[in-house]
Length: 279
Ligand code: ADP
Image (tube, rainbow, N blue to C red; front, side):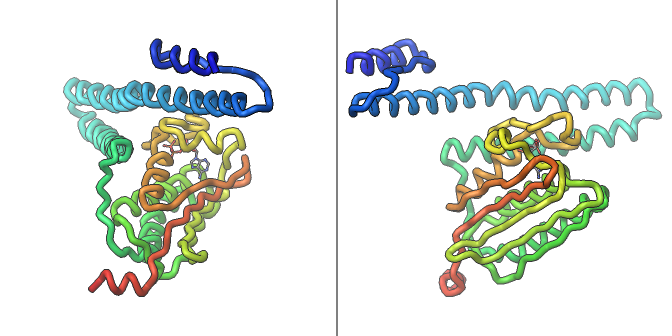
């Protein structure tokens, strides 16, 4: 018990979250308690570490496009014939920054419990069809075929803007990490009390040791393989935040070289309650 108290004191006095009680194996309740505390300290340490890293990572990611924009401005001023090209680069960098800031805001608001979703009955089937159509242009550039199997009339109680962002992120990833000439299949179906969405590709896949990490902020399994346009490893954390804020869960099933499936489940809105809330 003295060791438990001492470790807790050291952590709270010196704020040294790497301290552990470390009683080792044993059979009675005190050992179990110590092991439970150690696991809790490990989780606390990991979440403090992630929080500390968030601001430097975000600043770094914003700094790069700003540097590119400044360089392009200088180039256009020095050589007017380069203006059109410079403007194009500036526009694309500004778009990336705008998307990045949107993702940062969503995550920070969710952290602070201020996500303020505007929930209403949404036909997720229709929304999925719309997102699939929107993905087609991006996919066509890589010769990827988009298949959508989602019937209208599958309802959830949700925030339309957030649900579109969530779906677009998954479909755009499926194209980004998909196989040239391959397919992206988007499915939505009713499973008991839930709607289950699947976004499937036949692309590079994800190594087993990376399958949990891809949900961490700023994590990219292989940045050199991430195409340069957009994306800094905030997409999936945002997807998870949105799904959880709707009372659902999201996960991935994948193997390297064998493509990936991203699945989500959201509580379905019964047609009867949907009609009531429309009144
Ligand atoms: P990014 O901006 O890098 O796409 P995300 O948070 O959306 O960030 O994804 C994190 C990482 O997960 C990506 O860098 C990529 O390595 C991996 N990933 C996401 N979707 C897929 C997919 N469909 N197939 C393979 N890897 C994926």
